[in-house]
Length: 321
Image (cartoon, rainbow, N blue to C red; front, side):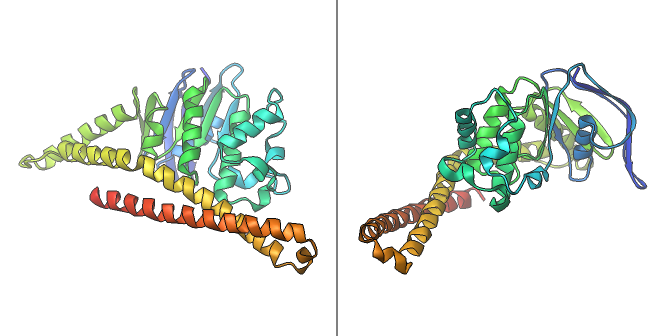
């Protein structure tokens, strides 16, 4: 038992979020907290993590070590540390090579690991923060909307890491595709109550559709087409769209990353060649001139391919709209 909650209640001012909640985590479970915005998913996750006050009793299990990823945790990175410095020392068993390999899986390769945290974009900070969380020696991992600001490649890396994670996991997320292969149980939080579904996200969605269909049929018994059939059709359409666009979407995202790096290098080379001092070094001028021609040609090729694939992607998405 990683954590047990007994008779837990939580209010913000006059608004009551939970009342008399009893909840127990079983070791090794991978749970999704789902529900509408403002229902209390993040609040319950923070209560389990032990980081906000509440009424009732929270009992951590023996040797339970918790890691918590909040949506704003990326802003807590030390701005003067570079990326490799930000992750060093978290897991003493990891060598620098292993750390660089992990950062590489989160799209920080080569000299990227020496970028200062203070100049990173929001998405880059999120990737560093997630890498730090995965390095911690925890057996209860709580992630609140971890896929916000992540591109497709980073989502895939995180998803595989969570599938292989041996501890207990709580995921607060609206991303159904991300949750599907990871979770084993769903907790739906709605209007101050929560309901447990002992199955994966597909099981939960089917049960939710059944409940919605039942309510719909009661309201409109004369309807020729049930809401369940409509939702099934919509779900099939979404699945077909996802299958048809997944590879193209990944290719477009990969090209965008390559184009960004090429544009950055082109600007660097332009600055060097625009510097009058450079022309005192003839060999360097020839070298940089040759490189900028190569970079420009490659950039034009990548942009052309990106345009072609983006148009293909737009055509497919239009077909399923």
